Image (cartoon, rainbow over all chains, first blue to last red; front, side, top):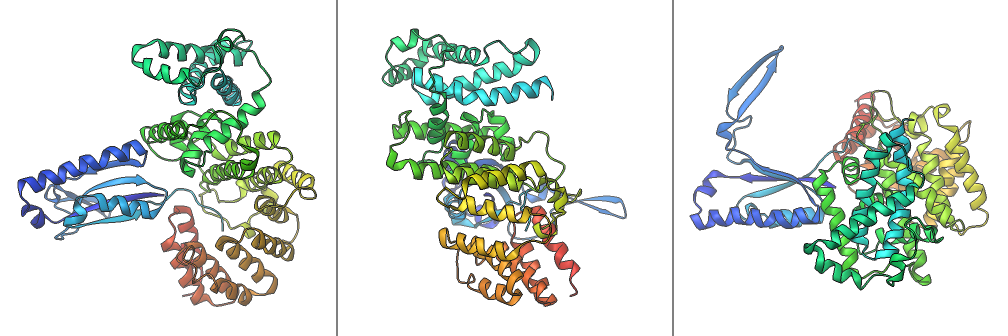
Length: 120
Length: 411
């Protein structure tokens, strides 16, 4: 089953970390990736820029409007993701628990939809 | 059929024979498998243009063997060579037989490779990927596209699986007699998984996507040929054929799923149905019954012309329930029971699953319950259950189907 591990971030919490603690977060991400690549469970990953860099696009009556800023204003925002494929949800949850951000904020584990299906 | 397609078919047929010959000659499944892939790739590039050589199998064995020796000659591979020497056959085997010599071991080779790829130390996903590559002759890129993952991810899975097999110290022989039934069961299960993965209901097929159903049927055919007395091997092949026959009728042109009972059965492909039925006729009277044979028998009942014989389907599910009980069998039995004895009886049986953790939150339980509530005339209840199932499924076509069913009911 394919899952997206969504890393939520709260800038206030991050701002209060010491330099060592921040370095620790980045080092923990590097350490997280290698075994996942080797096991063939990692499908893709990315870190996202701060939402102040976002552009939100809407089309109304065929007219496109682009405004600066995120779609939803919230204290926590999506800071990055890992797309993984694991044999069980338990394994995906275990991996989410290894992410340093799980100790600071939270990781949301959500299944990806598949393009295939069985007739009922 | 183009020259490229013909070559592709030939290469997939030859892949396990070539690999088997190499492993017997040089040991080291891991490196022989890589060398075979390289030889297959070289052939896929050259043969469509230059023509197929007179002895295609010998050509592949020679090219793959050359890759292996090239690799062993390189200094960086010295250590690996020293390790593999220990696994090698006696030295005279290296020089005496010509590259294309067939010492009659091809039959066992394919079986041995299947057992190796479906090694119990591997996860089902790894078993499937390795089987498709080593026995099916598919490239890593093709397998990656079929399972919707990046090629690097699939390459890593295959390489990890080969390392794990190496670490178990497994030798290239048939498993001991006592282990055979359980090992065959794993092989059949892997082919079943490959088939199901490919049995997608989306139309507008992705051209890059290898037909996993076709590959699974081809491999199941090979297993049935190698183990003609195994009732479950025959049953699995029959099940695949009878299921795949529905391919053209199971979805609308827009890719919307059509439930089994509503499919236009005149659009089912008669040739695989006839073959599946023939297999069952030859197997059921003699073999020890098993879940694949029973599921195939059920699929064969659906394939009969005229009204669906629900009492017979219910009877077969009752046998399956005794033989291999499980929540999915109960789900299907509840549908058959509803058709024979009324939806209330089906719903009663379903309620026994609410306490079963394996299925209590599964979208199929809600979907079947919705269907039976609809049959019972409870539109509001059915609508609620269809929407619940739509929310829970992780399949886009299933979700569209379930939402459509909910929309059609009065709220």
